[in-house]
Amino acid sequence: MEKISFLFSLLLLIVFGFVNGSPPKEAVGVYELKNGDMSVKFTNWGATIISVVLPDKNGKLGDIALGYGSVKEYMNDTTYFGALVGRVANRIGGAKFSWNGTQYKLVANEGKNMLHGGPKGFGDVVWKVKKYKKDGPALYILFAYDSYDGEEGFPGALKVTVAYTLLAKNQLSVTMKAKAVKKSTPVNLAQHTYWNLGNHDSGDILSEEIQIFASLYTPVDSQLIPTGKLEPVKGTPYDFLKPQTIGSRIKELPKGYDINYALDGTPGKMKKVAVVKDKKSGRVMKLLANQPGVQFYTGNMIKNVKGKGGFIYKAHAALCLETQGFPDSVNHPNFPSQIVTPKKLYEHNMLFKFSIAS
View 1 (tube, rainbow, N blue to C red):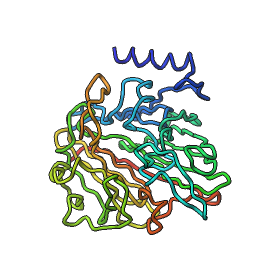
View 2: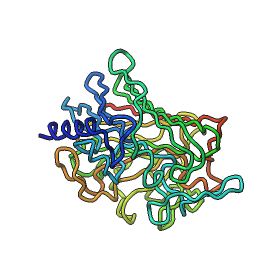
View 3: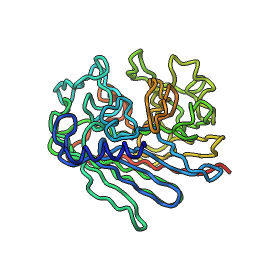
View 4: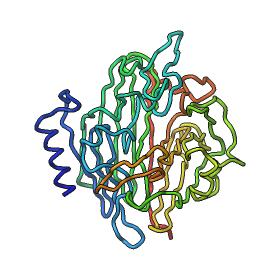
């Protein structure tokens, strides 16, 4: 029944060609990459990952990414399930910033602040499918989006691509690139999949074990805007330098984890980000990336969201590891800059390695 509903919704989109009342430049579809027992599905609505299917320690296949049963539901989504978010992911305090003597007022969508690019960020637009190779040794899909000058208040046109590549040994590579056309502009793209290694419908992730390779984090105020400081994780609930279960100290926080870590390692180089383990399923996820930070989020704001197969997702149903530049860096000169000039290409690389614990 779910499959029939999904196909019907997809057919309506293609036949009528309308998204939120206006005709899209490209039809919205679903695409799959499959290599052995691992398969990943995507939609070009928001360049979104909609499922990641892997075997557990008993060889049983399961979907470890939260999501919906139809593309139409992604169009009304407020959780950013699986989306590619930008032009600037995370929060910008006051929805404004100054650059070269000019102040830019952005479109606020979280109180007076901007979150994940505004009311209609990159996760809420139709991307072009530039390349799609589902057979042969190299399996990948390449999405592209042209962001116009002034979109959500950001200066300058921006050409953006994201390539998802399925590699051997259950590895998924994500490569995000952005080119400023004529004007300098802030860019901070992030991949926003919600992971539950026990399966998307297995309950909360509090018993999953995580290690985050970061000695420092960026404290925030009551609106989750960074204060501009960098503080050590040692002696705080944010310390995951050694593996700990996610739920071990979560009650020391108001709602759960929603914080940016300053990753250890060489700036701009691929580095260890995190390792997540689920003892019941035996699945392990290792993440590497070349960005300075990672937002660790435990789905605190999920409230009775109807997902795939009618399963109801609740708070802490999954975790996000959004590698990124530091939040609100446009308003903190001491943070690594997110400004991209026409002469400098933005490139954000992620590598997910999935395995079974030995």
